[in-house]
Every structure is written in C-alpha cells, then in structure tokens.
Length: 236
Image (cartoon, rainbow, N blue to C red; front, side, top):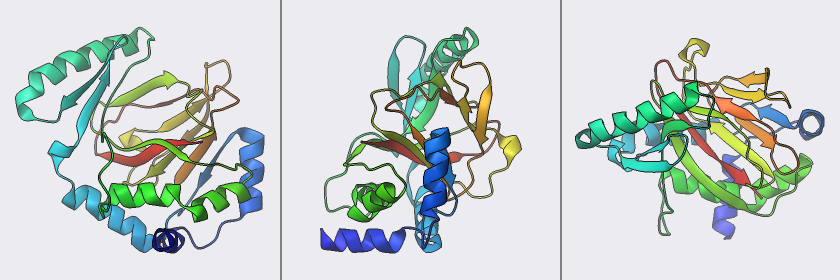
C-alpha cells in the first residue's frame, strides 16, 4: 500500500491552485484541471494506449436506445457492429439515449503494471483522495472506471449520471487533438436545451463534474476523425 501511495504521489501534478479550483467546482458544478498528471507519467500512459494496447482488448459498447451490447472488436463481427450502430444512430436522431464507443471491461488481477491498472491505483490512492478534499469534494472510493476510445462516428448522447457517485471524471489522453475533430464533452444547461460549457479533449486535462446532487446533463459529440482516448469513471 505504501509503495502504491508513493507512486501515486509521484504521478500526480506538481501543484494546483486548490482554492481556485474549489471555487469553480462549487459555483458551476464542474471544473477542468490542466496538466493533471506529471508529464512523464502522462506520456507513459499515452504510449501504453497507442503502442502497447492491442485492438482486440477493446469492446465496442453500443446502446441502441433500448439495450446495451458489448461486441468484440474483431473484423469478423463487422456486419454485426454496423447493424447495432445503425440502430444507435437512429435512436440518437430520434432524441433517445444511445451511444457507440470502445471501452475496457473488467479488472486485471494484481499485480498488474499495465497503464489502466496504474491509473486505477492512482484514483484509489490516498494522495488523490487528499487532493479531492482540498478541492472541496471529499471522496471515499473509486467507483466504476474504464478506458474509452472514440473513433470516427462514435458518440455519447445527452444523459445524466445521477446515482453513479459524487463526481464524474474524464482524464483526456489523446495528444494533438484539434477542435475540428469533434469528441467534445458538452455540459448542458439545466433544461437540457443549450451547451453551458464545452471541453475539448486536451491531452492530460482532467474534467470533474458533480453528479450526486444535480443532473449535470452532458454528452460527447460525434468524432469526425482521429482516436479520442480517455480514462473515465466516478468517484464516490
């Protein structure tokens, strides 16, 4: 445990204006923290995702407006994926909740030194919990978390995360992302009618937003090109 806490301390950002971030989070219900991880650790996770992680390790998660399916990321299942994707796209056009993106499932057995497990240990660590307390958002545990990968055409329709935890988070892990590529995290107004704040997936930025006491409607816009990578989950 001490070794894990030591690694976490070394991986977190060097400094943050906790008072300023806390004020923004309290006032708006969301906040973005730039350069969240130490640059060396952020680069290691990025290399793991783009150079080491095999495409077959991703599951294609599709919600077609009624049901959720997890499909193997295999060329042999292409027709099946397209059929589910068309149903999800239709549900989106009709204003129903739907999504399509790649994600990881399950937890690796300890000890595991892969990038995902290192991130999970970081978000479970005392240093991270102490940082959240300094930001005025004390937490006790990491809830569900996973790596996500959005490719061309992938999206996440408007929804809320009530009952998922206290805070939702998204740690962006794609380098050189351009706004015209899409894949923006959009926080909506309380009546769900207009974007209140849009976050481009800037590398090594962490977006936090409250989900326990407010709906915090949000969505991820369709990706036009590129590969949008992130570590996403909920803190309880």
